[in-house]
Image (cartoon, rainbow, N blue to C red):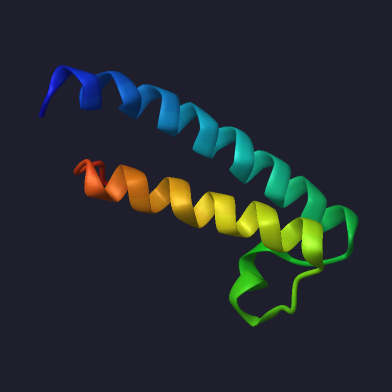
Length: 67
């Protein structure tokens, strides 16, 4: 793994933790169960957070990080 890629992993992991926390908090505030995200039609703001979360997980997965 290149040094540049290694340096990016902690940053991506920290961002993912932050987005996960925000997503869960926003889901609960709107009366959704975060565990049921795959079955819920998400409003715009939640959909954006979900997409960001998925993107971060894909980037980490591409770098060989197991989630």
